[in-house]
Image (cartoon, rainbow, N blue to C red; front, top):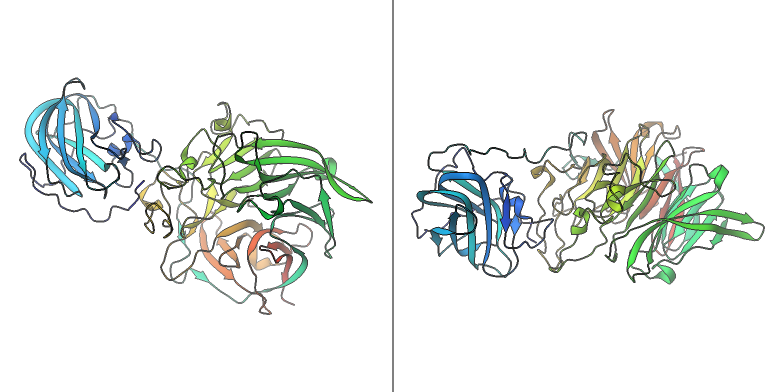
Length: 566
């Protein structure tokens, strides 16, 4: 698929039929009308209806062959004499404009034999037509035909006689009012750290942690290890874990991931955890499970293991699992962030599953604690995964946490930059991979280095509360792990979000106002003694004393504790 932002359109060449370049007529008869096409490159990302939605950040793209066509139904017969085509980079060198009264028999009203792309305006003798079609005959690239917009105008500029158009995309109501770019000069600061770091216990590629009611910490390692750790650093291995694809250090980004103590741990002794497993279909699937922690003088183990949820589609996760767990403040529901799986399509592009309603990939899932679907989910009456989806359109959601006011937030690793901090709204679509404030990687097989359409061009998607947008002189921060600070140990940080960072190897503080708007970002790459923070893979605030605990990722991983500077 092609996602080069439409910045400058080229003026088209001469047409065989009479052609004039003029201001767009005030009434586009094709706007939001029913559309059909001979094919589509991707039925979700590049559907035919994109061609007349009134926006130039969406597009229809055809299969990679000739000929291909796209037709619009005006609803009733109109006297038309002009068609405007806004091409993406992959355009038609030769094509024809055709009209029909019944959608079956077509008459050619204009031919183009030297199309140059950009914005092309085709005029012809006024003719009555209900259906108008562009048929592409020759492409300028190996890709399919790709149109931002197909517009149709009347010789008298009259309104359509069957004005039953839908209203088009809407703003996602209660999303953030502004989107804070932490990469803008001066927006992100690096103040002196008001804290010191103490090492508690070493680990090999640790991934998740949570506190138990007695003050101990449970830590996971990606290679199928889980430990109970005392505040002084004594580790006890927990046996009885299921096998993940990360066993013995394999699995790439996938393996054993997050862990969370049950909201009722004091009574049920239950740990929830996420992992990517090789399922019965032979594919890798993100899995949410729970089991009771059984401890004795002989050690610790998991008992009564049960799978709560497993991503049900036939796709096989390659990476970008997400896999963070968060319990609702009332303790009645569990949320799981699910990444897009890093699964390529036929063209080598990735992420389309995040927009597909029949898969959990690229979604945030909300379940009752018994694994059933809450009826008040956005589509809670629908069967299967469609009813379990709380929000849609995520790439790699590596942080998930509730703030003190009960709002759910997420951190997300974008593509080449475009990392995000998101307020999660019920039913929200966050746009991946249709929008992002980052770019394709330079090593991508498809559109290497090219930018994605930006969030501010597509108001129907929830924009990030903050993002680390692409600039050539800075690096991604790669957020992983999220917590909100409301304790007294760091009073100046109350109400802030704390974000882990893996590529920028730092701790970030995101400053929020009373309305939840981001007003500042601080980066801490080392403590007050000059000790490097390192790669912050996951973090939690101690409910006992307000200290901040995190796991430093990597083979030389470490459970670490942050306290104020003496």
